[in-house]
Image 1 (cartoon, rainbow, N blue to C red):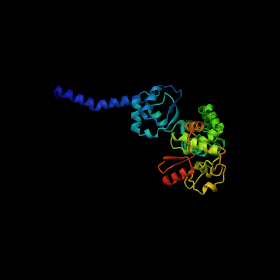
Image 2: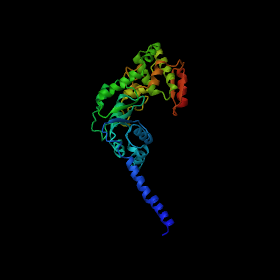
Image 3: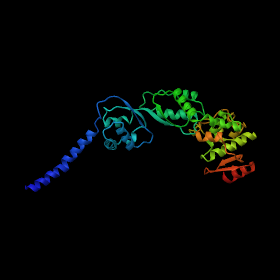
Image 4: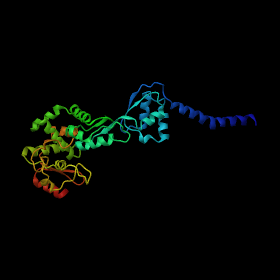
Length: 330
């Protein structure tokens, strides 16, 4: 074999055999622990955070040697979709492989989102579903205790990082504290212009949250309801009847459908077809936009509203106009 052929085959050997081996050794080195330091630190993953951002955050926290190597391992192992949102106790003596595995089941806390307009029983169901998982050996949540402790209307809808071992009273207190922090008392006091107490504003907001389909509608619906209150006319809000009816096991819903017969058959102070006033307490947990709308309703001449089958709202000044809207749009 002449020298040129020998050099060619030597280069080919390096490229085809040695280079992949070297790259694999280097890749595995990048997956090794950053150090022997066992000191734990809290690492947080937000809901919906992509693996690329998680990997970068791990690198910035000095928990992995290389973000790209971590991403490649997650992709190769197929665990990307099983990585949890929450906070984790990690240390630098863990390899990237160990950290990736820990992120699939080792969350200390979990993210829980409460949408606007749910009632406390629904919140209890959401919490239970998130915390009562097969890998949560610390589960202590009591749904009945939460429903008993929670103050309807004051459980602020938001996204929270909740400890896996959280108890009902602590969660209820945290949601109510968040309400007090985020809802300015000055806003609630604005309701006095319409003879509404601070709690009246929250009650009205809970109705608006269930009735409005957009932020644009909220202050107008608030204005309509305030107009009816001032005129001594029953609010006739279907959501209040739904609240009074309670859980519909057939439809697995806390907001059952309402029939015309329910308007008189559902005997409850929450039935605003029978009682021309606000319900005694909130019927849901409203967000800021509904609270602001209840505190400062639009100045509107309307006394009625309805949503058509496509969700578009139609207002009316008189009972006759409203009857025509019913005929035209329902």
